[in-house]
Length: 401
Image 1 (cartoon, rainbow, N blue to C red):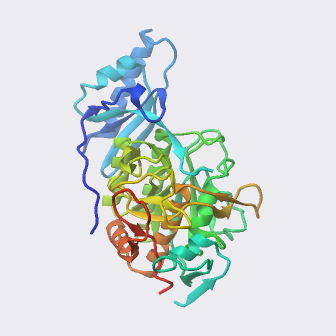
Image 2 (cartoon, rainbow, N blue to C red):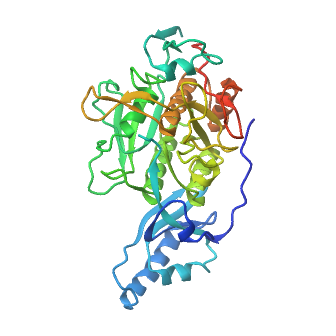
């Protein structure tokens, strides 16, 4: 099995100075990750009492919102909130807390039983169904007719335009983490990702079900606390519906390395839940970013039609697999028939998420470890140009077999 080397995690407050951060943080907003086996409810009640007392004391210059989100699933407990710095100073000495990190800005990872053949499918689908480098300009996609039937993609993103004709009634709204915002995709990212995962024309797993988990606002702004809220909902929905052998969570997004976020993904992996994440579009080592830097993620880098690493794709040992990500035709949210062309690790992430469901629909891949092992075993080695370290594995669906 190919695995990522474990990081050494420091306790308590993140040591990087805010002025040195690669991405912006939300003012006075933090995510607190608790140690294992802490009673989250009791801890949160105590923190809320401390926060309320501080506000009443008049020490605050303006109103602080206190705790906004709670996170609690096996292996990951914590909360997010809007706190005065004096409360954060008190929390540094709390022995129930593992670490305190800023609530970061999260970006979308887009720059702008028989064998079936789909002609004029686009080069991306053709490449992932061809062993080795394509020697011609064929755009024929060869795939097994099961095509992800009975599987579920949880698309943690900007929402999905569920009535788009690409989805044929297989897309639904699952959860919306953004207050006072409709669940529909008015940003035009989640719809595009979903169509590459499971659209009838552009998708890898053309018969899968697509579940929208909205975590970005109407102008595409995101924050770690909202993404974690949506991710927690997806994990719990998969657990309660016994879908771990038939589901994947897609995170075509990136923020600066966030230990709490990575722990959540690692905990889901240990529960058997597969997460596919983009490496990011910064031309930097992938381990500097979350969630692609999580050990439990399947981290995807982007290549062009020539199989070379896309110039903006992150790289390094944390990238597990590569997939097409440049000039990808997909669905758009403007109408039921709208399309557009995108580049970025969002697109390569969507190809691999679709491939995960494609394999889960064909094979008895009961958990995240078995799924990742099979995905990497099936991949084509040695064809990616300039991967800049790490694994040189290109996504492959087995040619329909």
